[in-house]
Length: 99
Image (cartoon, rainbow, N blue to C red; front, side, top):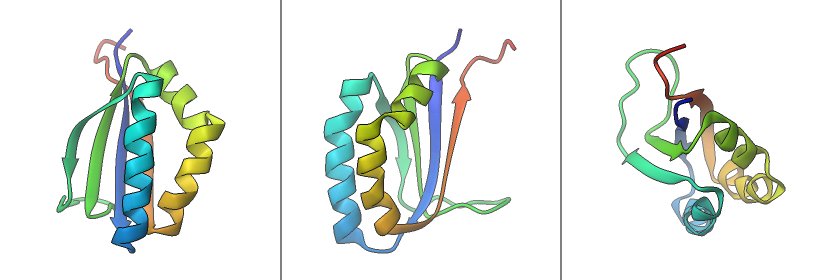
């Protein structure tokens, strides 16, 4: 089984409010065995719809990545993200290429 990943794109509409989300997220992510492995504040989407901010978050497995997203504490935290950004896309995927 491969690692799990969140692939996130969003456009920040209120940097101050979004900063509150980032602070909460930074405190929370370690509690679910995740770590941010890439972040770009000026990402360029060349196909489809994406946002300016792109983030890749790694977890030990896809199952842990899904469980982390579904946790009540993350869902509460995500309200700050929704209130301060638009066009958010989150894809949760298996990092294995052998399936």
